[in-house]
Image (cartoon, rainbow, N blue to C red; front, side, top):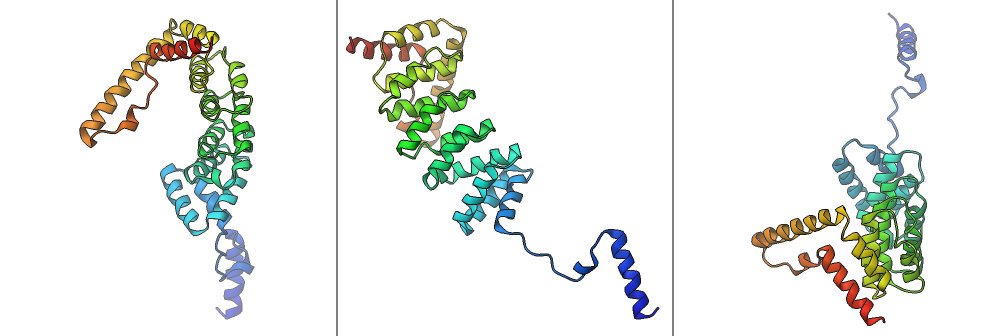
Length: 254
């Protein structure tokens, strides 16, 4: 078989197998940084995805953040969720706070909104404060709980009013966070006391108190292993203790 026959036969084989003749013998171009970020977000294993994104962040932090933000606007729900989680883990809220606020308020994926809400907790700008106030309307309870805590902690104009508007939220857990936030603001009044009194008689209160007991038990076990750790005891306590705090503040406001 001469050279021409070999080449013709090879061309036919390539056509049959779907390999373009023009690309034969060429090295495939290396994926771009954005493509590597997207591939990491699509990886089945979340831990592997996290490791790859960590390496990419070290190689090109700015480029990786930009690629993650682009992914947040993409069509794939899991990609959006992982992109937001990566941005929060790498404290991107301190670099692109306004973009993170936008996604906290408008991203269609609830877990992405939650990651953005968490990722903005270390950012103290007016836009972030106002973003948390708007996030009190989120239908995802966990996002709303983070927002309530941050609105209470940051305070400022309109904070108490925004929290009071949510005092009768249908979710017991959400109402509790609203009450805590108003206590933090020193804005608790008779309305908060009345709400907490009613909540303390609902079934969720017993569940909450049991969880508090478990938390105390866990901290004691941790201290046995690692020694005293005061920050572990930063807790609100049982529902009765929270109610007592509200009563004390309300009495001073009369």
